[in-house]
Length: 309
Image (cartoon, rainbow, N blue to C red):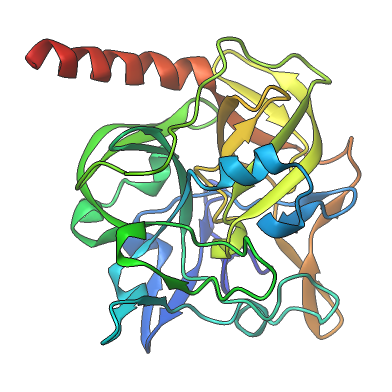
């Protein structure tokens, strides 16, 4: 079974996926990056769109505050000051069938995140558990196709941030899974996303923006909440490994939570692999850590910061 961004497989215990990422001849794996993420799945139709394909301008604006998390080896500066992002070809690395979407794109990221304060990014807790996370991780805004024909693998130096400190991290099986990262400098020109004050109810609509399988940012709507628990809710979102840490939004464009767990990514079909597909009401669904769990911790951090000042 092929899972997550490249050549992934289920571990023998805990249904934890392990995947490899080849960058500039160097191979990384999720055990080295400490990314114990469960893989994810397509429900019903594949609703993932490039940012420019999304017809709702409000969702396009939200995508600007989404960040891709990738190893430093994925970034290369040129003599003109631009930065190129290097990742394995998504289709070739995963032996995908030609019917799959986005097979020609590269996938340098291993998790997603989003801006929640001037220098704080939220993501999934399991994305930051490597003791060397801050020394190696790069957080890259603007990794998306927001105009037709644009090369998403070329970004500006001002789009790239380092990790100064992991302010909070927790990853509970079947419970809350989130982290807050302090960036190496404040983000200029982008708006922090707002958390919803209440969780969505069962059958409410939700959508997600993030980096499925490490690809340029995608918008995936057409989902609804299927179940509710104390710290998470479950929805039929079209998400993959790499979407871990993605912002899940309600109909008011507020962050309803963080995408953290889900179903298998790929299954074999003849001599290649296709996205694992479920009906909208079948399979386990995708787990989302609720906004209230995250915003409480963030509020405490910001209040402590104000008190020090």
